[in-house]
Image (cartoon, rainbow, N blue to C red; front, top):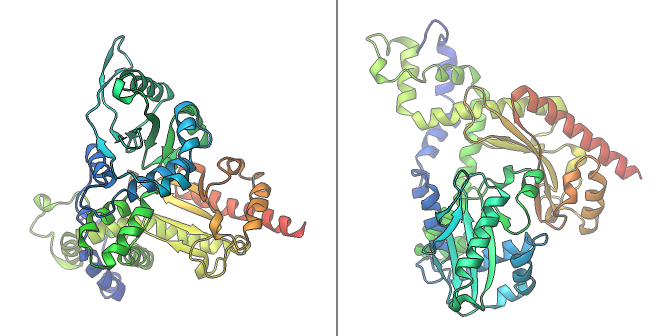
Length: 446
């Protein structure tokens, strides 16, 4: 540690080390029965896992239920699509999907098509990530699984044209119905303008549809069907769902980081001071005690350092708006909050708000200078009266024009601004909360 720039004060360190919630946090970090806590899947591995989840005959015990979850989610996002998808989902409605059997379906990655790549005159062999083929219902669904990769309308049009011309022309597939779906875990980061640029020939989904599969599998797990554990783990990892232990972990990290900012700052100074750089004096005194805690509890320290900015923002926004404890719901990388005017829209006692503001620490952001995205979250099912939801939505489109799109969606996450530093997201978040509150007050008076 650089003792000249980051001296360690004994009472601050010992207050930190004796914090009972730090003790709980250290133990909570050790708790995992989830293999995906310790590995990170590549794009190909994501596709392998999705193929496993979507195959009715696999050992997850879900049969064709995951395919049904997938198709129902695609139907909900298909209203603006054209050509193949428009025809496909006109026939395959949620009611028909739910009562049909897809037990004969299988998932393959074996089809190869020729695609024109940028910078090349001739077409080259390419491969779409996944295909669901159902010989019984005569369906062929092309899935492009892009984990944060950038897409273009021309690229997607080339893929669709290649599948139609090279696979659809085969005699065996002449009477099949084709659908085209893009999966992107980071789809919520796309602006409406970016989505419009991708055209209307593909359905675009993030991974939140997996939550329905996870919930069903959790119920089976509770009945001691251990075979579904991997499916539960994978589906949960791709959504915003947190287990009770994960939720407690997020709460502990936020609380400890908020109470001990001086120590967290000192921990930051230890980065890069690995064992090869130790000297005979490294482990001496108070600074040495912190160094030992750091190397012995590396994951805890990383969580605390990453959460420090979020915890500080929560405190500042709470103070600036005079929020009550129940008006703020925080985590390690994000938090949601409401004003009293916004909270009135929600069902009493509901753990989710009908209208809230979300601050999200952007993935792959620099720990020293993190960037944030400011979003508004709209949850139709959380409104205290179904009749009010559409009225409020129409009123708020003056402040949030993007609410006009996907008006039947159960959840909308509308990006207000992104790539904001801490000062900017604080200023804009507070201003947005005041603006929405004033608008709701005006609406109630009319």
